[in-house]
Length: 54
Image (cartoon, rainbow, N blue to C red; front, side, top):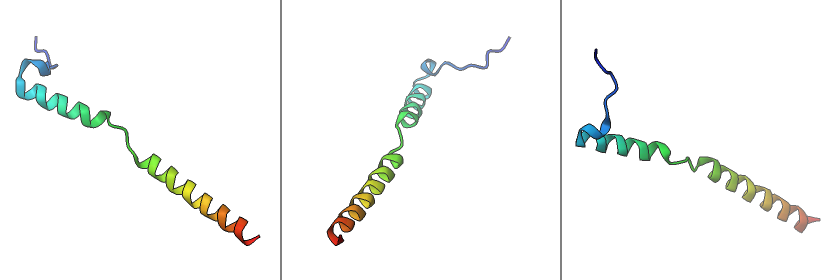
């Protein structure tokens, strides 16, 4: 009976590859944060301009 699951700790090269892939996938994306900051900055600029002109 053949076991298709390969334990990454069984081979040093496979383990290093497994650890490297896991670290990259675990990092959250910063794109939503950047978009939120940009939208907030635009809202604050528009609000400041509205208050300055009225």
